Length: 117
Image (cartoon, rainbow, N blue to C red):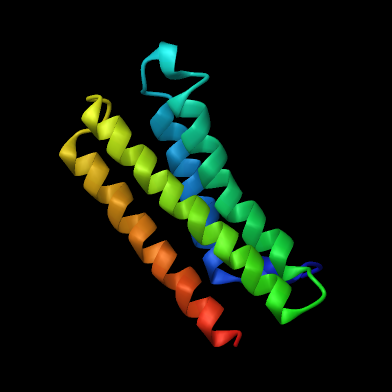
């Protein structure tokens, strides 16, 4: 593997969720295309991108900083799910699926951050 991030389980988990989120927001109303749909896609992609970018940094502290950004983006995705659920775009079951997946991912990121100390 040419890049450090390729071997990180948290990156692969975040990438899979990003793909799932992208498929999900295609079901949102078209008037949300440039607002909630875009925001949730960008936030889910940001989790992946921050993990990758941080992994190639010059120091462990810098990597931890990017993992904090990834964590914040994951929390942003979850907050978007709450908005989408309240607006009636997500069923309780779909909301719970994504909520649980992002909760697990956020815990993984936090554990990985702690392991880097």
